[in-house]
Image (cartoon, rainbow, N blue to C red):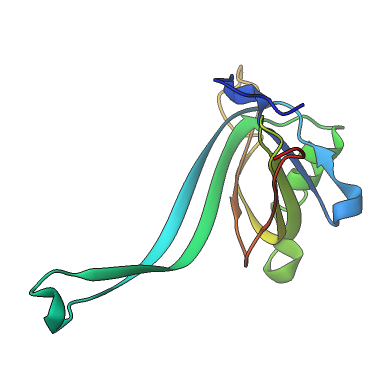
Length: 145
């Protein structure tokens, strides 16, 4: 049953893989942030007496994820394995499941690995990456809504 009310952020779940049939959770991720990059067209028609008109005409999503490198976890290994890839080889399926049951699937998302295994000698090695939408995602509302 979909959740209602407030919720802890950890109830968001992420899965990734080379195809929708090979998705795995990503272990040891600690935080994420989401940015919507919206394109807004503006114009000032004479009949609006100097007031601008606007229309949202484009949309993109970037998800920044930080966590720890966990060798042997299928999802973590998959993301880390994209660190040295370029072009279409750096694309993957990325799925975001919200606590209310909404599922957003980014096919051909660009995975931009920013940090892997570095840091102080006593620190746990990080895995940090961005998921950049590459076209319109598939959004499935929770069942029962």
